[in-house]
Image (cartoon, rainbow, N blue to C red; front, side, top):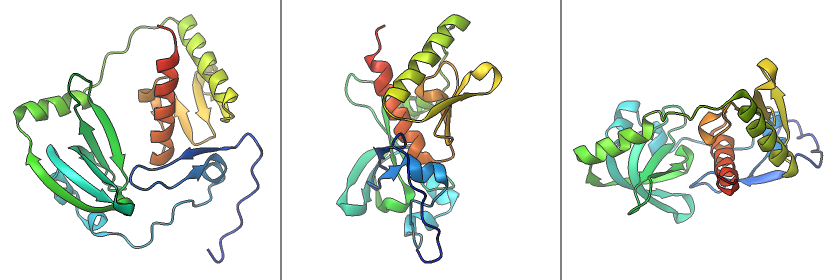
Length: 212
């Protein structure tokens, strides 16, 4: 864009994670995110983004089909809609499997069609997803082991990571995301939803590879 300063060159360790937003397929690199360069050009808001929070509330607990850019389609139960980005959080309940979540970024939404109203059972299942789960008790030694193992794994995958906070208990990823003890996907926090969703997915895959 005219008038925007050129992005600084990226050292090798700031490699792209090939992150993408569901429904958008928009790549984002750690270099762009960490340097503060705007990486998404949303342009004018679409009809979905123009809706009010009260409008979005009418979709919650309903089965919907979302048509996104490039003719991508997603189906699931609306758990919530982010009031800032208009991102739709969809829950699905495959047979004999735990519920899973997917995110359709607000700027990518072209059409949302309600397929079915939710009943009491559906509302309870969706509520359980939001309910905080009890975390197992970890000793200080075990927390240190989990932190060091995750930090080493991130560094091995060329993801910049450091320690911050009291006794370095918090891991800081590329300066844009933090991971608190006990270092699971639920303990990730970031103002950038694309990076947050991507790192949570990577962390979930990492934990599934670990021995019990």
